[in-house]
Length: 290
Ligand SMILES: *[C@@H]1O[C@H](CO)[C@@H](O)[C@H](O)[C@H]1NC(C)=O
Ligand SMILES: *[C@@H]1O[C@H](CO)[C@@H](O)[C@H](O)[C@H]1NC(C)=O
Ligand SMILES: *[C@@H]1O[C@H](CO)[C@@H](O)[C@H](O)[C@H]1NC(C)=O
Ligand SMILES: *[C@@H]1O[C@H](CO)[C@@H](O)[C@H](O)[C@H]1NC(C)=O
Ligand SMILES: *[C@@H]1O[C@H](CO)[C@@H](O)[C@H](O)[C@H]1NC(C)=O
Image 1 (tube, rainbow, N blue to C red):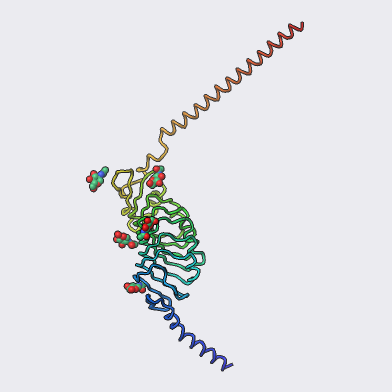
Image 2: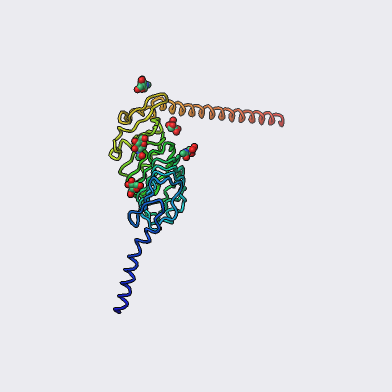
């Protein structure tokens, strides 16, 4: 019994003494590994992901490089990743399914990249994700209604400094844990499509770091930007149903009614004529018979 325990103890001691060395051995050549679970390759002029990475990496910093893509199985391979910083790279696309339900990722920074669109299901159903940074992607003009579907833990979302002119309110209203959202620095257009988002924002100003104040929109072309805090629901009044719309509805109702009456009158007259005509004919025939 006792030798067995001793043997186990020495094995554990050996393992624990070699573990950090393994971590260091697998540190990519141009990167820093300040602790066994952190790899920092910030600002190393990388154009792709560094190859071999320790499989148990939890914190990966790849900011300020020229990385153009991440393979879609990346987070399946590095399933312990909790923190992934890809800020200031050249990513133009995130393959759908790159993040999956099983991912442990809590923090993802994709700000200052070349993303143009966030298609549906880009982030899978990554239930651990709490912070998502997508700001300063100056070409990002489309965020799908289902872009963030399934991100049930998402607490903080950054979409500032992009090229968004409109956003389906469901992108935000379906995030049950959302506490903070940044939307400033986008060329918003306050037309009738914007009213639902405007209403949501008015009801959720506490989630906006600068309130409605920092968010600007243009009301119509060739006009200067207006701060959202200077608008109210009344600003969108022309989008509501006006008395003129009621008049049009009533008028069409009356027109249909009149058309109905005319049609039935015409039908009744025709039927009556036909009946009269056939009766006369019948009478003539009877006379002829007689
Ligand atoms: C990564 O390394 C850079 C220096 O190359 C340093 O400035 C930065 O603070 C490090 N970041 C982290 C998160 O360790
Ligand atoms: C960014 O994306 C646009 C459009 O997809 C492309 O034309 C441009 O070359 C890209 N820029 C860089 C630096 O990759
Ligand atoms: C985005 O760009 C602005 C102006 O270029 C800069 O002040 C800001 O720090 C950047 N924000 C992020 C999150 O990179
Ligand atoms: C409002 O503006 C956005 C962005 O330019 C556009 O996609 C949308 O069709 C416009 N909606 C209406 C009702 O004009
Ligand atoms: C837009 O702003 C400029 C400069 O701030 C000003 O001269 C101009 O009158 C403004 N135009 C409108 C339509 O408010």
